[in-house]
Image (cartoon, rainbow, N blue to C red; front, side):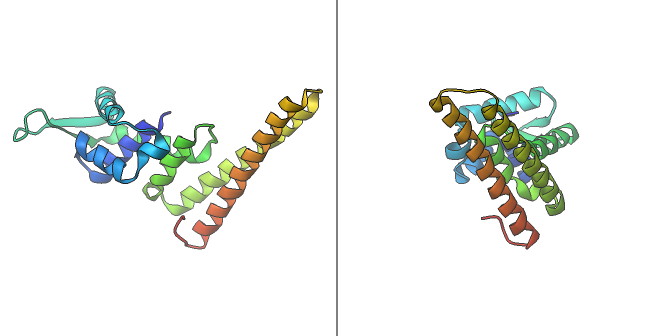
Length: 176
């Protein structure tokens, strides 16, 4: 899964119909280049690829030669929702996936978001336990042991942050 794919589908879905410049402008206003590593060329490539895969419908705008408008279709909607749910539920070492999912949170009902985030916490807790167990299995040089300690701390920190987000959502607060 790529954050670009998720974000492009999400923005086209948000606008109902959008051309490449609009998608790029929207993502630029979100500063997605900083937190998702997006470039304008990747947005246009994603739009063409998603259309080729049958996830977006295209229409040419006769008043603007060369301009193509994109609209998400039923297959694209299913792909978008699947990607979004997975990005919320499944921990991934690529932070841009969770970043993209957080930007698109309003696309899902709040109760579902909370349930998906709770699954993420359980997965993170399992991952941390596995890291700790692996670190204790055999004697390693201290510098290597520190790598395990760092990863365990990162996973624990993410789990704590997600628990905090769940609490804010349950209290009806807007995510920070």
